[in-house]
Picture 1: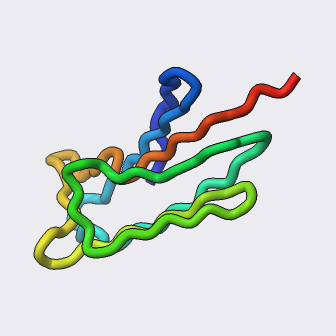
Picture 2 (picture 1 turned 90 degrees about the vertical axis):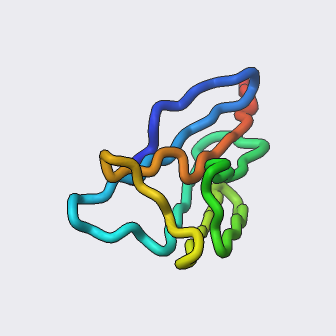
Length: 100
């Protein structure tokens, strides 16, 4: 799992999360991610890709971090492309307050 290139849209930043599996490995049934922030972040959220249909998902914010858990069932498993990747299963957006 890795973070993609951050993209700024207005006063928000979007960071895709990219999951790539080794050849022959099974797609995960669940994923957990925690992102810690440095500096002043006034708003942060996790969003899954629109094509994903999880069995369960939850996101919690703590001071300085956000955590996300997503689980897939047999009826709607995590689908991988030909490169054995799932891009943007989750992404975070954060508004950073500019400090002088």
